[in-house]
Image (tube, rainbow, N blue to C red; front, top):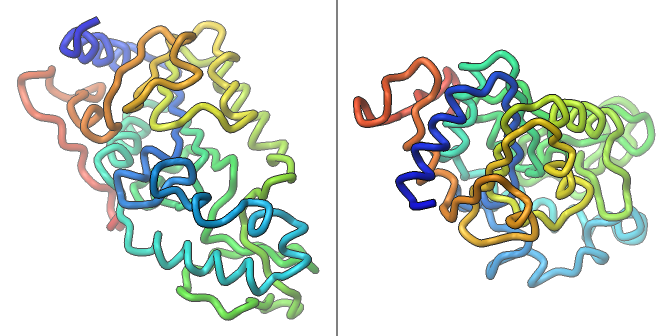
Length: 260
């Protein structure tokens, strides 16, 4: 399918979908300047995950782990939602049955206005007490090392899912149920290698599965439509339900109130 034909087909699918699900990965946030883990500038090129992102690493040296997470928070703090984030948030507002599933922990989807979303790997801006379990959002940059719980003075940990930890059961069940019921699944900016999320598209029983990614992935042979493109460059060209037809007016999803 040619590039123009793919655009026309995706526009039709977006307009006709009644139960759309969007699954996003690090490629979406890379367009906002957030470094990916597996790209040429990936964080794992300089740090081994077993040294910094496991419960064992935190137990062994919490200060080192927090210094690294402070560095990550400092890198991400200036980032702002890009056209892909804003289009996805606008699509949610246009469809009451919409759900966003994201593997990203940078919080940019929330900043763009997404509310019906599942953050399967957690949120970098959340902290959780290792003693009493209290969870709070804390956007201070940097945090004291190590940060302490205001309730019990216990040590805080990042509110993300580390290697070796299971994904939250509620996040998994909600995501799987939505994918099974979906009539359109957009897989956007993900390498499709991190399990179990990489297998979510295989649960889509009645959905048309569309992949949007600059490069082919292990998922590519199994989707109905695969488009080689950066997410923002493509999605901002797709009119949303209720907007003028393509060619009548360029799509420019407005930013929700309060979004930077």
